[in-house]
Figure 1 (cartoon, rainbow, N blue to C red):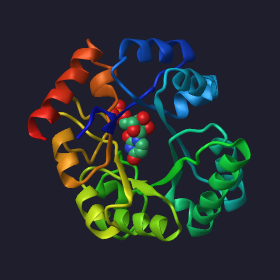
Figure 2: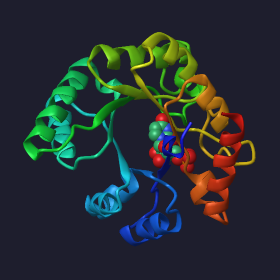
Figure 3: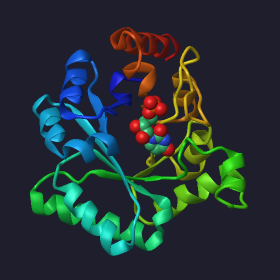
Length: 238
Ligand SMILES: O=c1ccn([C@@H]2O[C@H](COP(=O)(O)O)[C@@H](O)[C@H]2O)c(=O)[nH]1
């Protein structure tokens, strides 16, 4: 277990707040740029992070028809980021088109292609919501596994899943399939809108490659102390 396995989201409204957070937590090496920041401020933050030798998870969760996701993936691959997301529910054709597009985009830009990973089922969705709101008549763990397997068959590098499903996905998809877990909560932190969480140590033990931990750190009164507490809890267990 290394500190680089913890990815911290820059879920802030503007570039200035993002840079302030990066400056406040110099020990964080892997940052996630998501919909809020990218929509407000565009790709400038990616250059800022690169200039500080940080790794970047560009979590734009593409979900559209194959031709459109391919275009988006080609463009996103130009940025030279480490990880990029697409929803598995975009379907097999879109996943395959996205897989090819990241290679094309990265080659055109002369950068390393990002690892393309599929969202299996958002960690904010409960079993009850899956059945009653989304009307999906499949048990949640089986659904998440099927989405991961479709992503794997389509050539993606990995999946985003809740820590509660990661053991099953690891066992079925194997060790080369990257598994990234948001919805991770130390036992002292609020769960907020996350419905299927485990602690950082439980998620790593279950087979996660990376943990995405946001508000327990970024919304803490002292983010640096919260980061240190999580790292310490993990270090004592591994
Ligand atoms: O299924 C998913 C996919 C992505 N996320 C993202 O991870 C972070 C989690 O932040 P917390 O503050 O730790 O809840 C956030 O940026 C989400 O967009 C997710 O939570 N679940």
